[in-house]
Image (cartoon, rainbow, N blue to C red):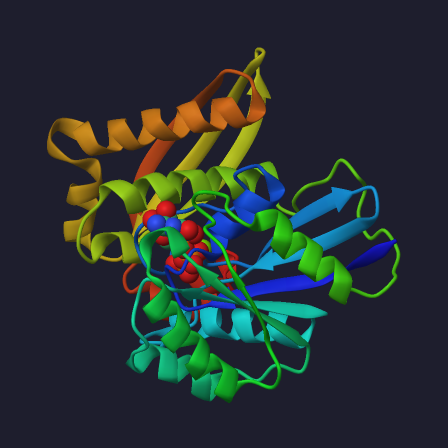
Length: 290
Ligand SMILES: Nc1nc2c(ncn2[C@@H]2O[C@H](COP(=O)(O)OP(=O)(O)OP(=O)(O)O)[C@@H](O)[C@H]2O)c(=O)[nH]1
Ligand SMILES: [Mg+2]
């Protein structure tokens, strides 16, 4: 069989996680309109009769402004070193700009490279051609493909292209396993997604979620989690007037977790301040980002 590891890299917000979910056909990685949604390497395992392809979604590469940002970039760079194929995802609805130059200067691919022009539902042929011209001259013999991860357009062609490039190899994972992440991680991510979607300005970027406990008591599945913020003033925003915001976050998260595991749960959410946690090495280890 054909098998191997394919990393999904690119700038924040270009649609990497949407692509992973479209390939696997399930929501494995959270998606929001905000940049720097993904903070971990997230594995999604694709199986068919002739292949097993292990995709690794990564945090968007950007100019880091804090310790968390540096760690996120390193994770993306690491996956490029360890894979058979890298998918460099580009938002084809946007002109080439300064942040693309940053990617150009920092990315070196030793593996095979496919440049994936995403969001073609939102662009035009002139823009795509000018982007292709830039990337053709920068990287050594890359393959190009145009897709819409959102509309699931051309995903099959992308899989076929990957298969032609992968070596013969073993089956690395059980056929029924679609991700490497456990329920605790998924709970944390679902809650963080709701916070990213609902909170405004800088607050969401300073949010982390820690799931303290998942236990079965009197046939009830109880989940206890904390939303971590960086400052006391943000605590009030997350709780909201009369507790309205945290109630919304709790209900929306609970419904999605219930849908994921197909059973009723009790979810208890609290808010805790950890000053400037994005620059705290020990907290970054505790939260699993390091
Ligand atoms: N129009 C359009 N929007 C898309 C497409 N793919 C993704 N998006 C949207 O782009 C936004 C970002 O998507 P994500 O999948 O979270 O992007 P990402 O690259 O994983 O972002 P980070 O995790 O922050 O690095 C979301 O609002 C998606 O719905 C696409 O093919 N077309
Ligand atoms: Mg992402």
